[in-house]
Amino acid sequence: MTFRMVDFIVKKRDGGTHTREELETFIREYVADIIPDYQASAWCMAVYFQGMTPEETAHLTYAMAHSGETLDLHDVAPIIVDKHSSGGVGDKTTLAVAPIVAATGLPVGKMSGRGLAHTGGTLDKLESFRGFRTELSFEEFKRQLREVGLVIAGATHNLAPADKKLYALRDVTGTVPSIPLIASSIMSKKIATGSDAIVLDVKVGKGAFMKTLEDARVLAQLMVDIGSHLGRRMAAVLSDMNQPLGRTVGNALEVKEAIATLHGRGPEDFTELVHTVAGEMIRLGGKAATREEARALVDQVIADGSAFRKFRQFIVAQGGDPRQVDNPDLLPKARLVIPIESERSGFVQDIDAYEVGLVTMILGGGREKKGDPIDHAVGVVLHKKVGDRVSAGEPLCEIHANDETRLQEALDRLRGAIRVGEEPVEPWPIVYEIVED
Ligand code: URA
Image 1 (spheres, helix red, strand yellow):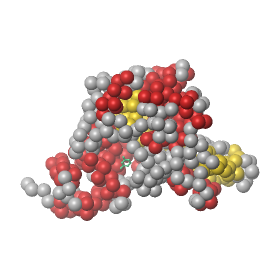
Image 2: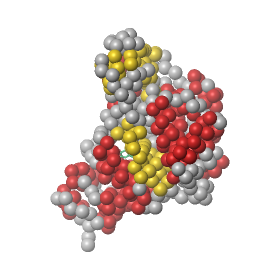
Image 3: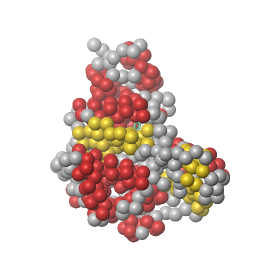
Image 4: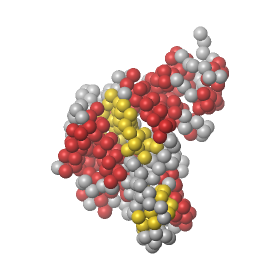
């Protein structure tokens, strides 16, 4: 039967279920520019309202994953482990997790991205190091994976072009927050990079796409099922993104915190998440039989310094300055550091992650649009987190800025993002649960 895009849209609009052939044809013709954006966006909106079955989502994922080139790194590493975060504020998890996992002998070759909306990207953070190169040829990527066991770079190939095109369209048509569309977007990229074991860090809360634990659970289970169905070992960690992760937001500030964590001196919540995500990667990668064994390995490579040495070796291999690794005070520093003091005594009730992310963007630490330059030095350091006691006049946080232009706006927003009240509150958990096959 011939494929007509209008029938495909109408079918979804009316709650119908697509076949594998229909979804494959749609993706093929959309990537080939046969189907115009206006029809593809009408279909995305129909999916937003009608949803998709897990089978449809799996077929869409597979078609997107195979819409361009796919990688096979098995000539370099017998098993490829990968992680992916659904995006968060202060999320420097990859910077600590990847060297920890690599230090246990599991090669990590990661293709990472730049910031999306109010969240920073791993490549931007790594470029805080003088000379660090994120654009590697595929040959360089493979050589470093073989020789160092750790490489993080921008995508070298034309991977999942259907996702690139569809994501850009969803971004401007109000169709990003659809669970099947997010699941197929994330999983198509992971499948295309040829990973065998994938740990997903699904963020939940104000600063995340998924605002509730229920939605995050559905998204996590769907992605785990898609991956398992395609023969991947899968786990998804549901973690908090109501308040920012750790105590720093902003590129160089986050790098410093990741280095401190590799020395065993990280903040409690971040350290816990790093142990969980790294532990799951180590377990799925076959280096440990149980969660307890995996966590013990994480402790070991931090305590004996091998995780830090792996990080240093990786930064140097990609052209970064080792002096900044050894002495993080040499990383870019902001000219102005302005504390925000609490007006009252009490307990921190709330720190709005979304607002803190926005403040960092206003200061120049993120991009308002694609291609904007970023300032690696700026951001926010939190002295208090939810549940902490604070006295009137004590600093809640500080702003690191280089430019006065939008400083007042940033200060006002940040003040509004942190709420202090009289009632004691329990600290919020960092890891809610782990979803498995
Ligand atoms: N991250 C992605 O890669 N895709 C989405 O759709 C949402 C978050």
